[in-house]
Image (tube, rainbow, N blue to C red; front, side, top):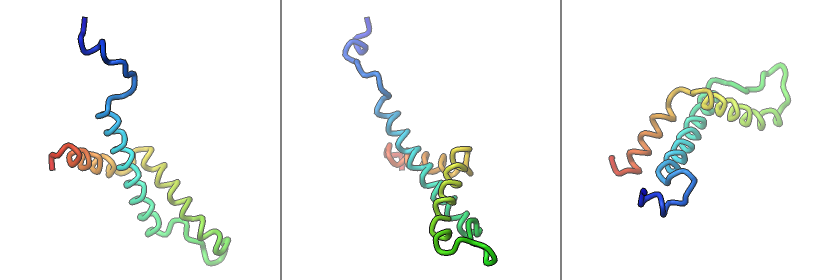
Length: 96
């Protein structure tokens, strides 16, 4: 009989796995923010001079950029989230 299994009634993920999931979530948010800013710099969502919805469209274009950036990250992104995750994980473990 395994002595460790007797006292372990937890069915959820271990604290380390929860920490990794939280760090990856933060890393993905940072990558999405970065991509959103890059999309903004490229002019995505900019109202054309000849046709547009005015101030309202300009205000809501940021939501479109953020949604597109989040979808980019969900589909693999540019790999920035993985680098951020490894850096945060190393810092969290005291490796840095």
